[in-house]
Length: 101
Image 1 (cartoon, rainbow, N blue to C red):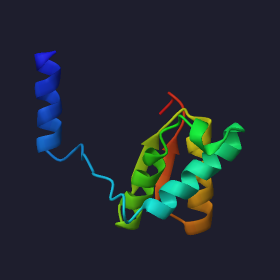
Image 2: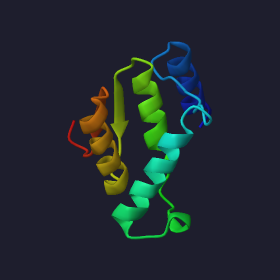
Image 3: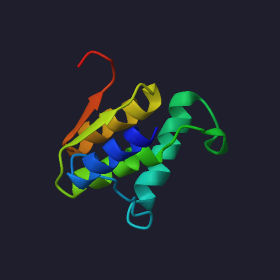
């Protein structure tokens, strides 16, 4: 385990992996819209949504900042919400939704 931790530290230090904080105030509208869309897709009430909608908001935030974003997700609701956002706003977000890459 220690070796894995050290490898992650090296990858982060080399800036090959960036840990990014979500700006909740700035992204609150997108967070709400995402949660509503996921609820609709899953056929649930908003308070029943367990899917992590912050993943979508973080990807969009990173794209707004001018970055190309790659999201690895097998979650159909998250992928559908991201696809809609990409279509509407033309964000530079690539969804990787399989193990064949």
